Length: 124
Figure 1 (tube, rainbow, N blue to C red):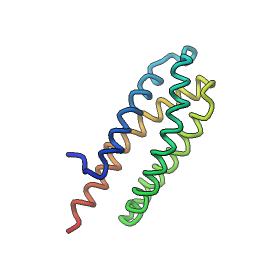
Figure 2 (spheres, rainbow, N blue to C red):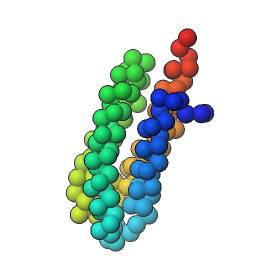
Figure 3 (cartoon, rainbow, N blue to C red):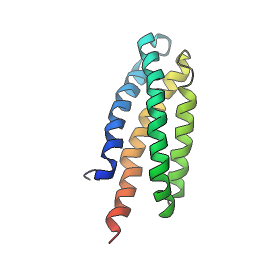
């Protein structure tokens, strides 16, 4: 399905997040580099803004369509990701952050955005 224009910016941001997530997920826990830790610190700021935009623009729409489970998952994962990224010196947390971020991006791209687009296309 071609991505709706309203979601293109968010999808592009997902691509950058996925690159970091893959780097963290594939790194052995005890060898997460200073460079990766610094990238997480920077990403946390960017993710906070990204999450805020999603929560302010997408959640009201999801709720209006009765998509409560998707809304809850979105909010919970945002909270978990911010929590895990809060200590960039904790290798275990960073590894978990990478794994969850990868799964979260896939969830949004494959499920959440697809559901939203289907609702938008169903409207006259």
